[in-house]
Image (cartoon, rainbow, N blue to C red):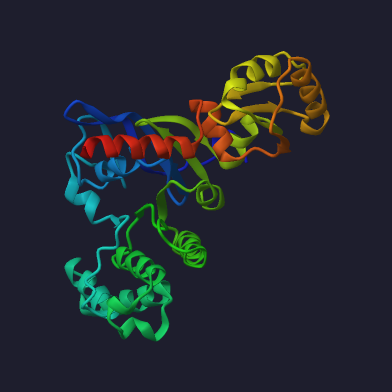
Length: 335
């Protein structure tokens, strides 16, 4: 198709310079977003990066301190009511009354959105199919597993056929089997119902497996954005990981940077990561250069890049380290 006849993607979510401050703390610091209609957009980052705060602004639950955002064509600050009837939201903690049955929760959600009786019955039937919990739909929610609760919450958020759904860390705390089930439901609602999905997650494999495009958030700012393949390709075809004693890391990074073929060297807390187009061909040269410099790695391995390598290259530290820093900061705040 020629460029003049191509159709530009319809925008589902856009944000410009979005900021949210809590006193002296800037939780979200100038976020720009563009999410196309019908895609799964991953918002990846460690705890404390600002993911949930961004979602709350886009869902009209928090007012931006500065900047602007539009969801489903409406300004979140000027037209919050128009935004709310066009979105579905499933937050980290499933907002379910455990004394009700799954069917009762879906019916209540449909009534709250003002669906007519005929439409309500059809929507509930579709939601039950999506929740995929069988006869348990008529059991009290208190008897459900964590995965069942998450799927019911997801189904309830779709009862009014929203254009956009926000899933804020939907698999946190779930076992691997339940997590895989939620992944499958996310894929199904996107492919079969055409819903735009804005997915926040701290799990690298989740973003890699589900998202069409990803924005990586650190300290309230987007540090990288693109498809998973593009982001990993930007690191290099291969990655050489050099595990070292802390005292050797700085020297090892200096030595590795001088090896021909080392396209990028990043010093982390546990060692050095080397991006290259030919890991198998370069690893020997790296080992020799380190030995000549009297630097002795505890391990030297080659693998393909991951999103954690993208995060490391953009921030200088890995996701796990960022998680620890956020936890330490939270602990200090309670002391």
